[in-house]
Length: 384
Image (cartoon, rainbow, N blue to C red):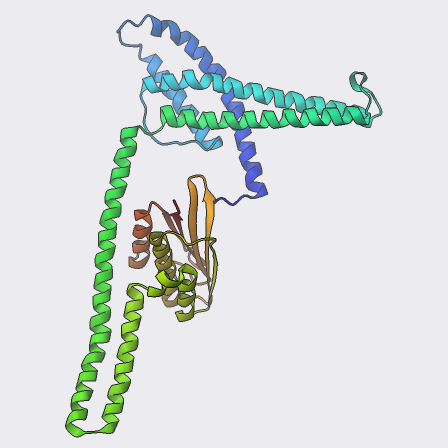
């Protein structure tokens, strides 16, 4: 979600350093393996390789991919051949040794700095260097610059490790394309299903609500015409007003016209006003999203608020809408929370429809609703 905390950053740094230390040790093992395998590969001349060589390469590559996934945030999916494993080991071996060198420089610098500072605090002159202001300023400047360069180098090694895993051990282009096609097919089917469900809901609203009121109105008008009763005409007028209100409600549920006219924030304010529960809306948008993103965000909030008011037993609902930065770019984050009893079914009709709508936009949708509550409905919609 792009939210940084001190604990999260510290944990990420510790995991990365541990991953680089393990990567240095594994690089030494892989260097020995490659040196032993080089004569076999050079003298192959079209003959099949000994079974131990590709098997060992695959095992080492799988271990490396697991290390990258656990410690460095690498990708842990996809199948690969022994040839790709060998190419990966040959490529990442120098990268692992480079990471070990950067860690060694960092450790040596930390040890030297500690030794010098400890000596000065004791009143000594380490290596004949006195703690004068020019000396302290010089060492502080050089040390800060060296630390910065070393940290940047370590970050570059981590990025290279992840890139090599994606390049050699990740999903192939064909597999990525196959998964993308499957995802698009499922999204298209889901959208068709959601549209059909929405049509059926509109039909029920018109048949069970508005149509019944119009039938009652017609009967009242017929009785009033036959009897000439002013009272029946007054009842017919009231029934016509109720029918108009019902028609406005149906039209609003189909699509709110003021979403196009006034934007997402005002449309969500209308949702809050019409809700049976108190709804607090916080919408922080510097600019209006694309219409399809705005529409998806609106229906996500409206469906979640409606569900909470009907089924959650909640006393309040909070809605947060904002654009946040993620690794894949800016996304419109929509979060709806309530203090109800929880237990919401993510596979239910309304929430499942929202998940399909979000997936059709290449977004992410999730529902967290443990028994006892609270319930969180969250959608991330790519802005690009």
